[in-house]
Amino acid sequence: MKKTFVIGDIHGGLKALKQVLEKAPITKEDTLIFLGDYVDGWSESSEVIQFLIDLEKKQHCIFIEGNHDLWCKNWLKKAEKPLVWLMHGGEETIKSYRVNMNISLQEHLDFFNRMVKFYIDDENRLFIHAGFTSTYGPQHEKNIETLNFDRTLWELALATQKDLDEEHYYYPKRLKLFKEIFIGHTPTTRFSVFTPMHAMNVWNADTGAAFNGKLSIMDIDTNEFWQSDSLPSLYPNEKGRN
Image 1 (cartoon, helix red, strand yellow):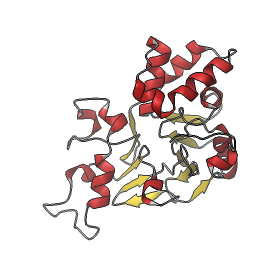
Image 2 (cartoon, rainbow, N blue to C red):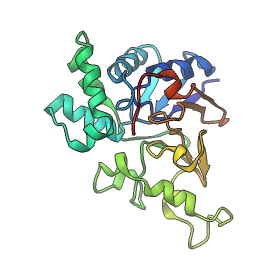
Image 3 (cartoon, rainbow, N blue to C red):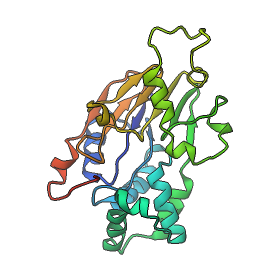
């Protein structure tokens, strides 16, 4: 039976990515859905992208675009280096590309351009990096970059009363749109949780790999998950994101 696995924010941690792909019972028939933020943080951002490009050739993968990927794409395409990006891992990503001169920048840019803002599967499950604000769904978001940056969807899921009936007038319309929603972007470690978090029908798979957490991969049907070692232990001579 074909399975689908979702992978949280990687942030340049190639060692962690390799670990979780080895730990999870993945077959060549399975689908891997990556929730974005492949770069910025640890020292192997360009290597992560190259690894994913190669993986895509032998495994069915869906790559969601994160806010850090958007920044990196704009740098590769237009040499844009906004201060907010440089302060949140961009410097490490630029260094990674400058060290690996054998990498094809055009091939990497093509990869970034192929990323999607969100994906909805046949069972009406949404996969998106951050969230959305429109009560009609991400397809109707006026500012498309909201899908890369929004945190209000996760805040809404956390704040909604758990015993609130779906038919109740107060039940959030956004949460009714999909059977389940899988996100990254907001590290669970902010809530002192180091495993994927579940609130209402939203799963948050960003378990703080950019900081002192781990990278997680989860079977979306069974909710079983596997994790890497903590990223600081894999990169003991680096600081990661602040």
